[in-house]
Length: 56
Image 1 (cartoon, rainbow, N blue to C red):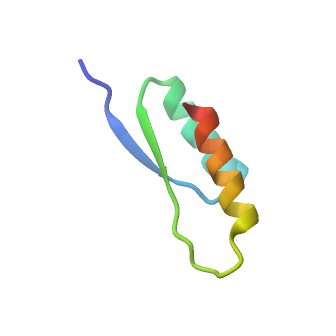
Image 2: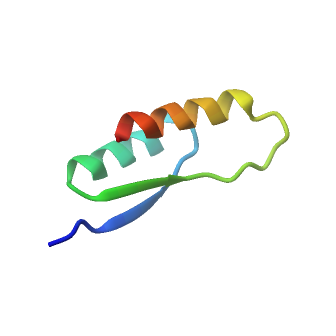
């Protein structure tokens, strides 16, 4: 059976990162998504990218 895909809204905080990690551990195919709603995003964006890479 193929993995079920889920999307996790990534806020850059601990809760969404932990939720994604737990879903990955439970053998779900996890994709993180976020919306850029502000102009200064360099710090948060790089943190989110790093978190998502660690989940792979």
